[in-house]
Image (cartoon, rainbow, N blue to C red; front, side):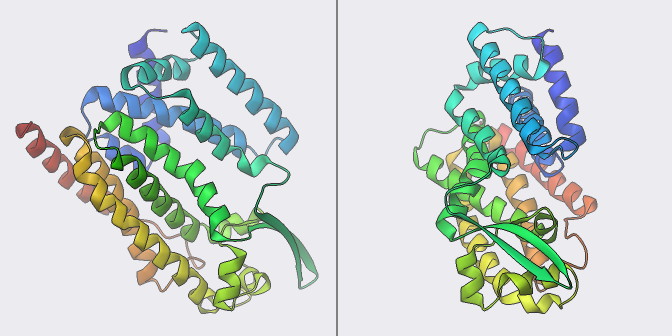
Length: 312
């Protein structure tokens, strides 16, 4: 497997699966675009193993452990038959991405496979003779740690590919990642609850006067969306405040990569704005940014990228 061939495999995975991320990859210089595709393909593989509900959780843990050991062996030897590992090894060398960040990335992916987690409690609610057991974070500190591992770490990897010299970029990338993940959490309340997970902290439910029973009632369409609006608006306001970090981060990364970050932030913030515009009704249908809107944002990003290259 040549390096070019390995990158081509990763690009195919990214084009097929990355959705919002792939729109931002398109405006990067080729060597950085390849690197982002390699990181995404690695992350996608970890997600696929973790989310494969055709396997029992115990089996998924075993498969994940075996896959991780194969990656670590590829890092030690510098060679592999797996195109994702080949491309990722090259990316790590080119952009000085430490193993620790990628280990954290996988750790975030596997959190939902753990039997118990610090700061997470289990509750059981019975409605209409149907019992459901759910895992829920106790407070925002615990949720922040989750957001850090599943999203901020991705941001910390990305800015190494984008390029930066000001150390403030790392904290800002961390906060931007939290903004993205909070947006995902708002969009996916129903889907997550059906899988037995509530990422809206119990502390916030209590502060909003929304108990778990009411939230599940809204998810099951037994109650109206407005019965959970106060809770979701609290989390939406928090996400909005974290997006401020993205504005500060943008001028700190290398000029040839700013358009990529702008595209990504604009799409994700647009998703949050759409959720707000729907009065936080994320239950009637899945909220998304339309493909036509994404293509418009991509076109603007490409124009920005061309202008920035002339200024280099």
